[in-house]
Image (tube, rainbow, N blue to C red):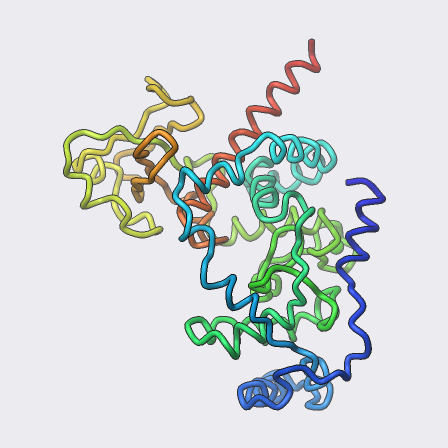
Length: 349
Ligand SMILES: [Ca+2]
């Protein structure tokens, strides 16, 4: 990342908010008062101070509109995939890889997560830090906590975690910006993930996912390891279909509940890497029959695609609970690995 870009990012992240005293839309909202009460009781916050921190929160109708139509639900796999697997994002990923080579390697050694998987997460989330979002987190979380009943408990909890973050992380409540759903920084961590899984990977005493790519890389790897990532284990593979009995095992949820053998009995066989079939070798795997798996039928660019995901596939969905998201991360990671291999070969002449 160029120095100029870094400066520009810092400038956009810390938008001037004026004096914090400006009263927002939720200052006297009963749910806000209750939340402040809880923070005072549970964490020993000073009531006046925490009230002041949250006083400027504003209701944003555009956020309520956006959350009602997330891309994963609205788009087919054929439409979703090319949004993330495209030449520019691969080229930007290779540059980010070179720039943070040593850090990515250190994260791989410490947590077992390959560089291309960490890169793919940061690439899908924010284009390697280019699009970290411009909503004030306090507005986003307050709007969703107090005006979006379907997920109010979740966002209410995240708003509390966000307030708690001010003590431990390098961010100020009124200034921090991110996605419309309250996710922050290079890896778009929600406040609870920030509190529980973010790490100080450059040992400067501050856990900063917003401006520090080194902390971001270590934190993604730590998040994966903590959610059960197994080094070297397969993530997902294409499957070949026989018969029409597969309905019983496809699109049954994110968790790998069936075994590969059970999925095979229903007519889906994983494309082996030993006799790799009509798909690129990157989309194969050789799991044991007892390996836990989940299966998907997705609408691809050339018709139905069948995929089988394993435990590591499920781990990716702990980042974003969508099979299309997980598959897009996997595909981007494989494209990055392929492109990197070609680059290295070319460099060797
Ligand atoms: Ca740090």
